[in-house]
Image (cartoon, rainbow, N blue to C red; front, side, top):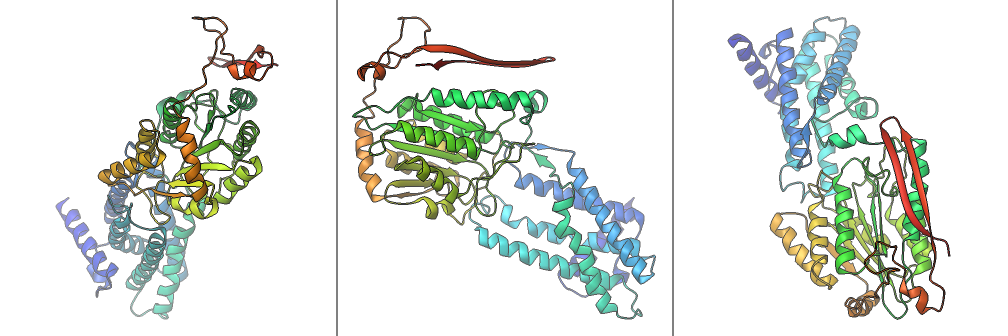
Length: 499
């Protein structure tokens, strides 16, 4: 065993020289099947640590990570076999994987640098793209050197074969995410979701979803004459991280309690645990919600806040994921089109995602406030989600729950996030809506009382506004939706206005 570890040390030292372009030859390596196994274990250990650094705060270890390691090893073995056959050199089949694996730990460690604590919050998207391109070029050159070292000195066209061989070795790495089971060693996992969740694509769930959406829209109150009302819409389309659901639900509670949006707020979420409780976060449902609110509000007076939280794609669009459904991502121009189509003039858009500041250009105008969890070139370490609410959502809506001044709440949240070492949020406020907010603040202390049919009973509240307008109080009819299969059941009930 001591001899095997000594040989491993020599291989890693020789691989380090190869990776950093120092002189090295085949005699510096100790090649055997045992060394191949040890080097695979070293590579896997580095990947375990790397995935832990990149993972969400509450991620758990997953043995599925071994799939990625075996897949990568299989690709390396396949390319080595191809090159050995082309070169008619059987020794190349074992030599090349050993030399490659001995030289790649340096690259794996350097690859971690942008993901180190506090670094991910300041590394811009452009910097990360340049870094990734340089790293890939480094890998390609190292692979070419490895093929060159493993090839017989007397072989013809040795340099040309090294260039060709390096490309053959690295090309599968470039395309592997498209075809391979690339699973991280650390991932978020919710046991309840895994065991009890219903399939979002099942017929009962899809039928219930239309019912849930209708009920959510029916429960929205009309705007109040002479009062600047605030409406709230939460949108969390990524079902892969339960923290996004916590974000929008906490935000809704803060807005309902402090900003009096109760009866004028709704939340659209994708989560395996809420398929029978909340409408899905899809562009279709968001369009319906905004169109309904557009019909309810006074466009010259009332304000609508939209809170978006989730991970984002390379084009900054909010990722919509609710497997096995195939959903469309929400882009900044797409949201603007939805708001325009609904005729909503006064807008507050709060975006919590990676590089959220990129939403500013498409949305900002004189009648709009855009609040982003970070600048356009900054990626926070929890912007891709976790098991808990994001630091931005917790800080900003935590302050919104304590203040009736939007600017003061934002400033307080900004200070709190700075103390946590989180990315600095940014806000753009149009000139017209800055003046209009004064009217909104003036009415925060004024709430319209609701009447109940029977004092002290659990009767459905009847809006007083209906009587103020000289119309009869609406009547309600109960609606239910239920489904049973085996030990699982889905049942929803609501009171719906029929008048």
